[in-house]
Length: 488
Image 1 (cartoon, helix red, strand yellow):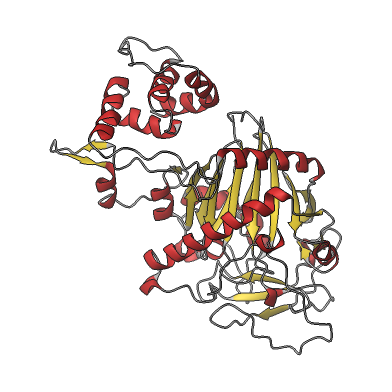
Image 2 (cartoon, rainbow, N blue to C red; image 1 turned 60 degrees about the vertical axis):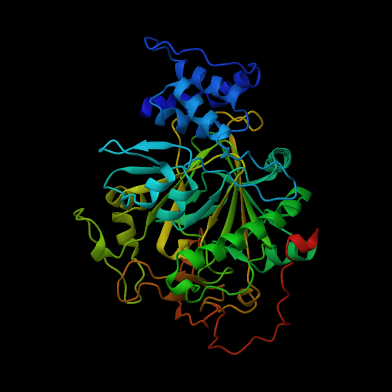
C-alpha cells in the first residue's frame, strides 16, 4: 500500500495534466495482470476524466477502498450522484472561504461480520490513534488532524486563481529573503531556509527594525505587506476565528476557552513568510516565540507551492517519557539545562515518543490552536523526494499570519539586567513548574553575547494580558500594530 500511495504522489502533477486532456468516457476494464509503474496513475487519470471536480488524493482514497478497481470506484461515485446525495464540488466562489469536502460519507467500509457502513460512521467508533517509538503517524484528512492534533486544516482554502497569484507574488518577493543566525551550543548557525517579516505600514517597519527583537537581535529583513498578503488576510482572519470558536465549543472543557487564551477576536497584524527551496531546506522542532504573541497564541499558516510534511510531537514532562536510557536535569526555575539539551536533542525526543506528520498541500490553511505552542513542538522535515509544483518548481512558500498583541509591545515588556529585551518562555519539562510562564534573558542565544541570567515569573489575567510588577517606563504609550485587513 505504501508503494501504491508513493507512486501516485510522485506523479501527481503529471497525471493531472494527462487527466485534463482525457475526454470523458466510460472506464475500460483494468487488466488484472498489469503491474506497470504507470498503472495507478492511469487509474487516477480515468477517474479524474469522469469526476473532474474531485481532488486526486480523494479519488485515491476511493480507489484504495475499492481494492484498486476503477469500475467499482466509478460505480460507487455514480451511485451517490444518482441517489440524490452527490459529492460536493470544490469551492470556486471568490467571496467564500473554501474547504475541502470530505468524502468519508461516500466511502463504504466492510466489517469483519460482513456488514457495510460508511467511513464517516466508522470514524465515530474508531479506536484512538497513537504514536509509537521510532515511528511517524501520517494524517491526511481534516477529521483526523482535528481529532489527534491541536490543529485545524482547510484544504483548497482560496479560489485557485487567487492562490496561484499569491504564490507568484511571493516567489518574486522571496528573492529578498535571507537566513537568520542564532547561537546553538556555542556555535553560530544559520536557519536552513530563508524568511522575511511583513508588516502593514512604514511606521511599523521602523518599529520592527528598532524596537522588536527576534532571537535576541533586531530584524533587518522587514518588508511591507504586499497587495496579495493584504487581500488574503481578511479570509484568513474569518477562517481562523471560526476554527477557534469551533474548537472551544467541541474540544475544550465545558465549551470554554483556555486559561490565558484571549477572548478577543484574532486579528493578523504581522506575517512571517518562509521559503523552502528544495527538499533539503527545513526547520527543526521548535515552539514559536510567545514574547509578542502572549500565552496560548493562535497562528494561521498558509501553504503554497510544493507539498511538505509538517511534523508535530507532544512535549512530555520527563517522568512521562519512554525509557530511553537518557535523563536530564533542570535548573531551579524549571528550564532545561544546556547539558540536558545537548544530550537529548529534539530529534531524539521525537524518535523516543513517535511523531505525527500532517501533509500540507498547495493552498491549504493550517490553524495552530491555543495549546499548540505550550504543549507541542513542530517542524518541517527534510524530504527525500518532492513532487514539483507547476508554478513554484521545488519551492514551498509558507505564510504564518500572527497577532502581535498591544499589551506585549516591547516598550512594555521587562528588560534584562544587561539592558536587553527579555523573552517570554513557557516551562514544559518539569512537572511541578509545567505550564508556568517566565521572562528570561535571551542574550546567550545571540552570537557573541552571554546571558545575564535574568529571570522573572510572568503573571497574566484570565485573557492572557500581563499583570506587570514593574513601574511603567517613561516612553509614550506603545502604538498598536495595524490589522492587515484594515490596511487594505
